[in-house]
Image (tube, rainbow, N blue to C red; front, side, top):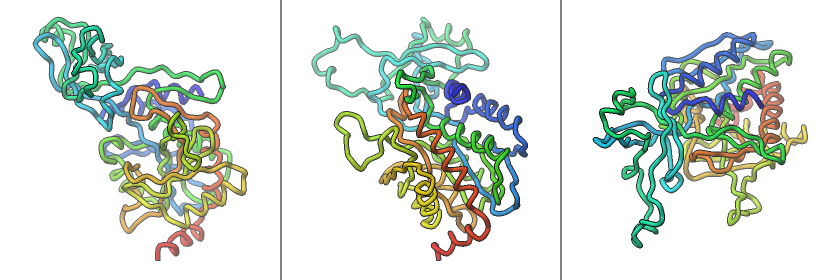
Length: 355
């Protein structure tokens, strides 16, 4: 888990992913792969198996949800805009880091003490546009002297921890450093395991602000089959105990539908059958909102058989998130076994489901 810890504790909101990308590059350099990237900053390792084709794209995304400095007030506070989707109620009194060049400044998203709240304020949900960050400055001049600028990225603060059950991982940015970790672990396994194809595994940029890196990455890689590795939503907290909804620790998550894609039926069936053959528990997810990089991958060129594989996660798009270590390991195992089945004939079978 040390690699996953390094990935989650690295700072990389949308558009500012360089710290995470450098970590991924360091890992890729340990493998027998060709390292490739697009003009936005996505990065991949290309590993040829026993055949050039089909080309299989496996991608997490480097970026995490965060913020950007948009205003410095005369009294030394920072206004900010969100990068990615946030619910304003999870923000007040949370610690953040303002990344300014090579320096990091700790701040807190300001809130009033309950003692001075007016009755009408107690039930008010404050919009993000009314919030501010306190970095301990006393004026805009002091802020400028420190080097904080409009446009600087702002990152949530949460250390990595494995909880006492030895399975629950607590960290920031599991959406989607989990996907980066899985892509790297797949390449690590394929250094010693045969596969009848060429695998291009790594991570895209700017997924949280519109799947932007997915579009350029697909153009770069030109895949025949694609997998987006991303988290889904665990619905197992009090008040959400639905028997047929995803739960943390109950196996990898296969997305049957989201707002950006319906997976290729043949590819979906291969994933489900492979899981059953290998005794890997599987959950399925259907979502009317949200989407992943597969929403762009599957529309590349003439169309690419694609699917989303992930894990059920709690509290995503906040300062903290949780996933199951067992689920993460099962995703890696499942993906390696699926990859080993995909040759040109199997890829052609996927296309027959689309015609």
